[in-house]
Length: 357
Image 1 (cartoon, helix red, strand yellow):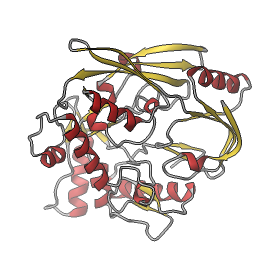
Image 2 (image 1 turned 90 degrees about the vertical axis):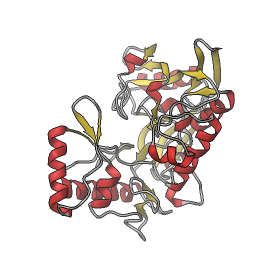
Image 3 (image 1 turned 135 degrees about the horizontal axis):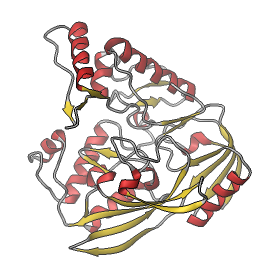
């Protein structure tokens, strides 16, 4: 365990903004993680648990408490056979894309479409990370956590986690600290069925087909690179939290109102907003589509310190000198503009600490 004082949080996030932590503790084992959290709780001080920092925006004033940086490591194969698949336990601090790369190399199918997503493995169940037709809820067998309220280690099943679109029991609460995650993956050389049209087109297959795992991973990485969603230090389009807003989920009546607003604003001949019925009477639409048609194109905000990515309108980016206030201010402008135009209020995906939209 290492302790630092007044450590800038900006250096530990992909957005590269955020003031100093009054106290910054780096933990490298599960026992150190639990001990550090218990120490802060016993002192009744503020706590911020930090993984890869890819989904976090901390205010410029910093954090007046203890930041616990989870740097635990380890990938343990609990079992692997053709009947039960590969049951693999991953430490919370393990780099997520590193684990996905190993899964592809080992012939563990089920997370290949989640390639290139930055951050730590322990963060993936919190927001039910997903992309290109896959989400971690499909492969998580259990999550082991430290319950700060009950002061004990608990094992949460998939049902316990209450996974929904980009959400789980763990999101929006600081009660649980993820220790490790067990994934149940399929032992095979082929991907899960390709579930994203652009990806299928790139691979030269139909939606629902399977391809070799390595080909699926490389195609996903290429898709993400085009959108500035693979970390690359010289490229400021990747100085972001990825998608800053989740795709809105509307009731059918709400979606009809949106269609009418779009027609009224853009003209009767305008294309209708994308619609993906979820089978439960709700419709998911595209946040990027709404942002663009509300007048916020790629690069909006430039040459300012914060701007929308030049590759993807869903990403709010730091052009090199942005503050957290710059980032949040731009996100607020986009959110309010979409609401004014179409009556849909976008919800931020990153966690904001010390600030709100």
